[in-house]
Amino acid sequence: MQKLKINIRKGSKKIFVLLIFILLFISIFFILSSNNTNLLAISIDEDSDNDGWNDTIERSYNTDINNSSDFPKDTDSDGIPDLDSLDGNYTGDLDDDGDEINDFTENTINTNPLNPYDILKITYKNNIYYLIDNNEDLVYDELFTPIGKGKLTNIEHLSNDKYNIDIDGDLEWDIVYSNGETTGYIKAVEKFEIPWIFLIPTIIFIILLVIFLLFKCNILYLYDEYVEE
Image 1 (cartoon, helix red, strand yellow):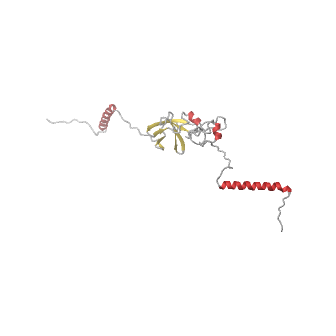
Image 2: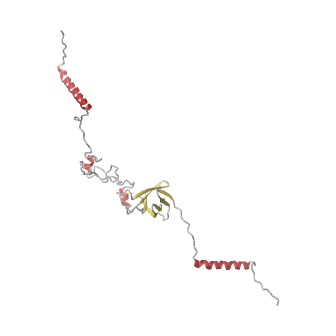
Image 3: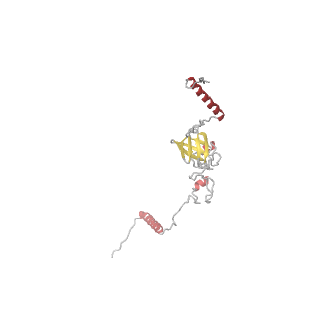
């Protein structure tokens, strides 16, 4: 009777043992994975408190990575904190309230960089302008034109959501904004009224002038009438 023997060269024993261990590890991995067991899985949570802010960013802003109510302030919720980080690794949002006017400009034109409701974007003939509310009383006070260094011009609040607007700063109204629409300003024709104190003498003068012309043209004339006795 013949016996089968497997002979392994001395130099290959280490390789053979290594392959056995690799196969064994792979087998265990697949078995555990199929049973939904994550004993071998190593997870790194980058947002420990699940507040939507990365732990690295929270550390830079010195907020608690384990407290979901403590995170960097982000007024417009665009994922960029309002301020620069304490360690200088992150630059703060240049437009905290997301109203399309950067914080530096808002401080210059005296609006609140943290209030998205004190600026209203309007357009006229494909040009962009902004109505601004300087004192946050929900009534717009000036027009800001974002050209060059920017320009402020006058507006007039008429009623509710209606304004006369001077675009070029010549103290003349150019457009009218009302309920989300802009139209060209139509100047009203002023009625000329003559005071009564001047009107009556003027009428008398005209009547006398007409009579004079009638006499001058011999349309009217005076004559003596003789009556026989």
